Image (cartoon, rainbow, N blue to C red; front, top):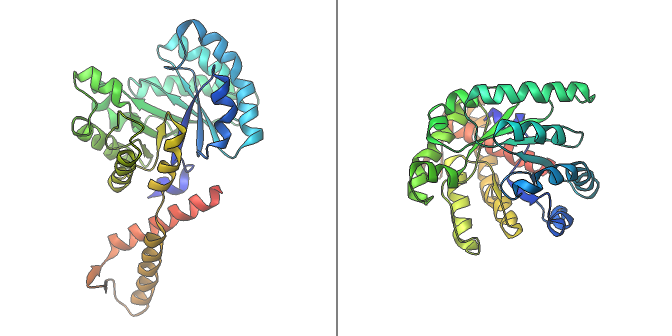
Length: 297
């Protein structure tokens, strides 16, 4: 509940390879809540240094042309991550996506590096968020520790492709179901954002199938996800937003709760269903979420 108010609304985050100008040029037109400047998987090793050099210019363009928040996805191992952070910790960057998180110590080490860079560069210390990607079974077993590693951590996600490879499985909805639920529980317990989807769709042209998974993911507690194709952005924005009917029903429940409280009652009925404190709290959280989405513009 508190994560809704504390952190930005990131229903959709679109990956943008730093070294592909045609993707960079149109990224701000896609309507994503966040744009992820990718220095990791989409960049060949030989081109990573050149891609890092492009980051300040891309950030400036994104900020000048759009309302989207700006993230940078960095590499593992550490020697690459350090160079990525040198390029990424600049004004205009809202979050760093930390790949292949190994444990809480990993995040705390990177936190120290970012804090030093922020201080050296005259940026507010602690302002740049982290999003941690858990991509192996060992770190998933420490998900609760990872989720509490640093106040800079806004959310965690499970890298389904890498995780499935690590356990010798295919990244299907069935095989990822339990790991994804473990991640949601860890995020909820720590009061941070659970990001991702409950399943995966290999064929991103299957928009109907993708929409189904996004809606199901929101039901499970996920609040947003990253995507690699701009056609998926509106599906994420819609699927991770309360519908007009849900907002109306939540407003009705909250209003009736006030009336019940004034009459000295803690529960009441709506359309033949008993409404008590947990249901009212969900309605209040839904309205707070709707207000935060409206505030994004």
